[in-house]
Image (cartoon, rainbow, N blue to C red):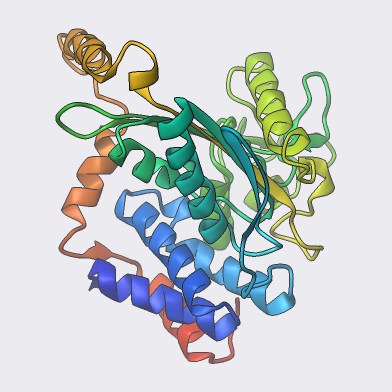
Length: 337
């Protein structure tokens, strides 16, 4: 398979989005996020999403030239309106505000409304960890998980991410969708016309399915049964009720014709100095890590993606089909999306 440097793949992905109609800054912000996910081995949130983003921009489901705007500010909180644009510039504004406000108030909670696909949630938290702060991120998405006892998709996959900086070494990174498998992985199965394992999803009639296409328009199994659906409910309310965003069932599927998504995101940042202090925080984190690593086979959360990213610094391997698709999108040539 062909190999591209991070810079080459970022440039190609950004050109594909600009060709679809995105602004230079929006295209570059999205490309950096997609390539970062690809470099970490998160192909479901990687450059395979480029074609879908480009399609949404071309169709007007996303305003590729939207500029995010802070619409409310109060103490340790603020709300950013993505104004129907791609999520990454708006997310960066929310994160920057959260860092500044956490340093001032000890804690900050900032949100985004009227947004699009959030990508790998932990990606947005990297600056929080670099600032020495603890961070959590949440987002809703088009309906994917049925309410407990129901068969119809109601909540989004509603990922939760967290970062915990360390005094030395890479931060602990937790990033999880609230479904048994992320929808991006099912999307890859659909593109390759491969069946999915039974138990991953239900079709739109609430029946178990092995069809990836049926799963994308049906509902996905929540992690932990009822407990997973309750977590999805919590994220739904944090990202939609507080942010004034569209509830997951009010958003059309990304994979079918529909209107503009109005997704909500939330970022929480905490300054350890506002509590026990950085020294105590770092000591406690390392004490826990030391005990974890006493057992053979224990892997720190985030270690696998950090190792993959380190290995990808020289080049990222992409499939021939993926490279051809990106080149087609970047050149504007006609062909299947």
